[in-house]
Image 1 (cartoon, helix red, strand yellow):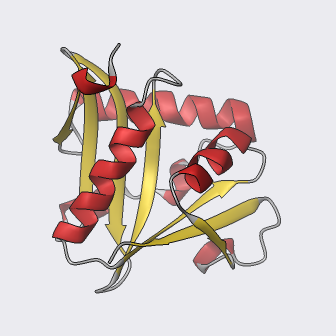
Image 2: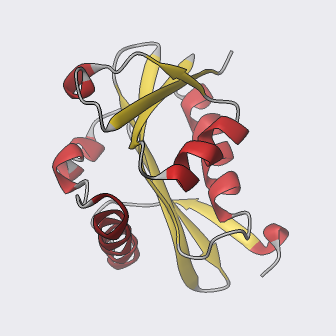
Length: 153
C-alpha cells in the first residue's frame, strides 16, 4: 500500500465502515491497555457542529478512522484514531487531515489523551509534533494517562 493511495473521507459515525473501524480500535486498545476506550467516546455528540469523523480508505477497504470533538471555540479533542495496518502512513495521513479539519472549523489547538502503556501511540504523537501537557478533564489524577496538545495556528 502506498501512502498516496490512501483516501480520507468525512463519514457518519453510524456507517458500517465507521462501526467496524471503531470495533477494531476498541479491540486493539483492550489488548494494549486493558480498556477499550469506549467510555471516553460519545457517538451521539458527532451530530453537533464542530465535531468531525473521518475514515481512511485504500481502494474500497476502510483502513482507519479518527475524530475531533469540540471542547470550546478554540480547542478540539482528537479521538478514536486508528490505523488497521501499522507503518503505512495511515495514521499520519489521518492526523494531518484531522488537523486540517480542525483549522477549517476554526480551532487553534488540538488536545488528546492516550495511555502511557500504549508506547506506539505516545511515540507517534510526539513524532507528529504534539507536546505533553498536564492531564485534563476526566484524566486529571490518572497515572496511566498521558495528555498532549498541538497548536495549529
